[in-house]
Image (cartoon, rainbow, N blue to C red; front, side, top):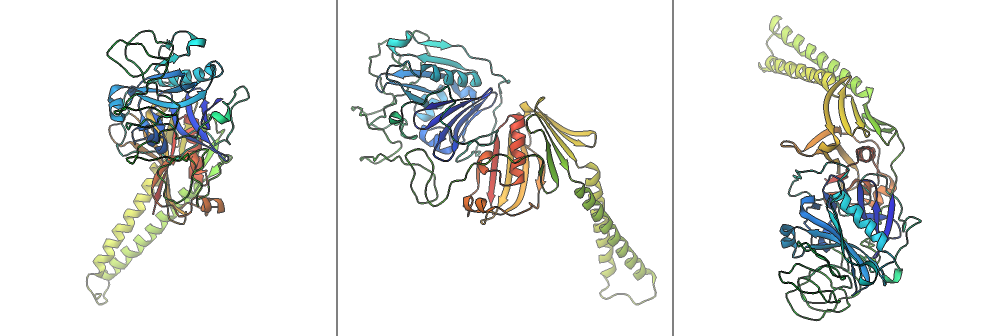
Length: 519
């Protein structure tokens, strides 16, 4: 794993088939955006608001034309971002979406790190990578061809229109890690040149732009000038040394003061950025988008050690390549007891009805009681047979093989269902929580890709979660106000079901989501 620090307390986490943009404060890191090879890009709502991205929280590879890295003389910084296709660019009002920046006065200190970050992102997205260097250190602009993704690129990215992931999120696949500036071989840009995240955003109103210019792509082949490539033009022209700021409908001078996005009122902005989407009154720090009001911040926690025991299941295995969910023998014993209980009452009702019709005693009053006894006997017999059917057919093992990328649902030695990694979009942990943060119901589902019917496959249900939330859980999740979907690792793995989902997502190498329903 490689971590590269960038301006604004951002860190780029690079792994074999995963690229993540993290933001950190004094206590933890959160994921702003994540790109996994063969999957759509996912990002959090606050990032969507700042960058004017779709509210669905998903970007598909066919919406991205290329990854671009350019150096700006205006603010003497490298800027890494995405260049979108025309349809998405028209919705946003811009083709350029900045991801990270590195203040670099001479343009040669952080170039290698920035190129490494850009190239790895382009590799995961299977798209081109452009580099526009400064005149005095890099020569002409360069372009790299698309790099084959380690996994097959999807062609069907169907998704519910109302789907939205988390409001904040540290890690999809592995246990959350404490914030760290970078690996020992990396160097963070000077802290005095690191603005707070959220200060840089496109705007369609005339006003002050930030010191980070946008670098939209051009669809025409050719040699770039020594300055970064700016928005498309149909006329041949030379770019000046001053970067042209795109997409404003009003003329005016650009100042060095940062532009604060999406406001309809004119006026002076303070140095404190405005952070959206909070239900509590409080203040945000200048370091990141972390809320520092009344609600305390959850401390990240690693996954618990295996085995993990749930209500009727136990997760066991090595935790890295092989997992197995085994149903408890208590479940089968409970089914047998229910079958015996229902059978006993069925016999009782049948005997009473027979005695009523065959004996010489007076008819019961009211007269429909014997028929009610017959109906009751039929119901309890049906319940007995239903429990017997479940005992015979319900799966008792679920095998998750990370090496082959398969999930197999077994009943004894018989395979009931199978899915491969390419069939699985993500792992969903859904829990119904009341306003005292007590879990009342839980589900573990696999979200499937390329399906025409039901999009989710239920792995297991937890109808009676055991135990009570810890003191930390009560403090962090006190009085949940609304339903939300967030990164699974942000849940803190306070419940066994969350831990099981975290392990399965890590072994399969797919995103994990925590779907909280407030009752």
